Length: 434
Image 1 (cartoon, rainbow, N blue to C red):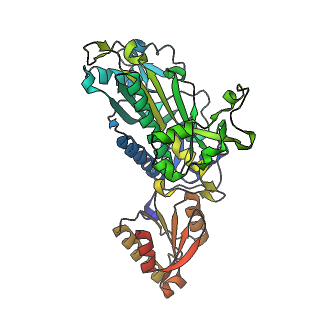
Image 2 (cartoon, rainbow, N blue to C red):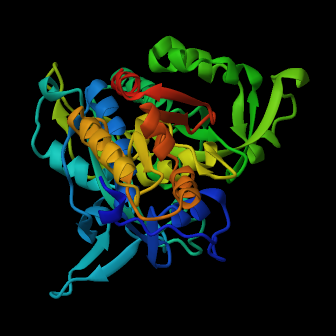
Image 3 (cartoon, rainbow, N blue to C red):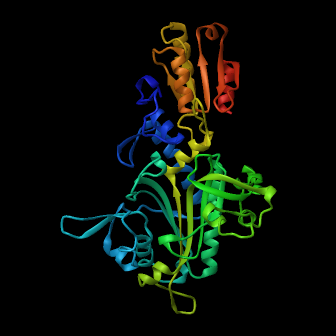
């Protein structure tokens, strides 16, 4: 993509209302724009990152055996009355009548709807187990939306729902999702800490939150330092033994830690850092299947209420979490897996014919090789181009200038380390094609 034809409204100054790093950089780098309190438009560069995050989430859900569908954003209040949650959920739920006076709501979650869809279509134990998921926009009317996409009112979420015949099956589904979450976050270059959590209005007695360690996180966590010793490779190949290892290590939020009189972690191994919640999983048994009067026949012919779990990942929130965990004074430093483009090609002298021709030719070769490239072909000074590329945080920068053209070389810079090297055009292409 040529930057001269792209829509990338970067900002030199930080907006006064942006308080945390991710919010500041998402605005300055032209990823989002606020349209109302807690509601954002996703601009082209931000949308590309959002799609990359969504793809990883989807691939790990599919790998775990979940089946994708798509449910609507607007739900009937009658569904929520069946489960008893319509009046109990609180003012965060946006309620409104349609033109016929029927009460509707903008879905904050989908337990009622998926329970009805699935269990009205199945009758036998042979249809279980199943896990269904979708990636859909949600709305929760936060009292004080703040911190950009970290606590907005409208957000993109992956929510999955498992259906099992018994408690043993439900726990197996829960563990499969636990593993999927460890892999998902590791693929994004994030270190996730699983924390036992209260179930809140979702219900049940088994729940874990997944927190990303970041100095600007909203939660204070206490945990065993051994958690940091679990390698990315271990998380990418996680199985149930990984769950046992991680959950056997001590991790909880500050208010829970304050209630513990005898901390199980030796003082020399106890760590305290801030965390950003990016995922939450629940096993809540028959709360919804029973309250909504839905059952299946087991192998003995008796009617039983399926055991259920739900599993959420904040897809749009993850973008903010990644930036909080990966940035420097110059801007964002995207992990390769979610970067909007892999390469930023910088033509140092758009007014130099030889330089422009060489840059155009290299851009064509990169595009033909299927290498995602943002080509800064603008008639701007070199310093401004470098500042833009550092701000938006693409993993690699490829720089072409008049002197390099004469020598047949380009400069390759890795954004994360600042490492630079001069390469021939052929060597650069070979490196980028690896």
